[in-house]
Length: 134
Image (tube, rainbow, N blue to C red; front, side, top):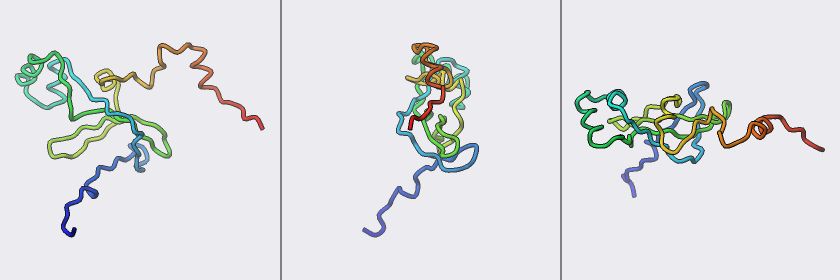
């Protein structure tokens, strides 16, 4: 059908913040951000203090459906986690995920810190290079 509107050309592409090559999604779920304090809501949603206090008064936490953390991979720099925020004009704002973003995300543990349920021995052995046997 000629004239059919396609969204193929409007697909968002993400680029590495270090080398500007294209990033590829790893297929991880979106980990949405939540805010529990009035100052966090005010800062991240760009609303007045009065509106932020009203939002927090309704619920103790506000789940932001327009900001999330997602896993990407770069050919040169490997795996990286990015914070993606959808703005009002449907544009995406992309930045590296910070420590505060990890604290305010749903269902995640910080990948920069070792898993507390793994012993030190197992963690150190998983980091050592392995010799290939011929």
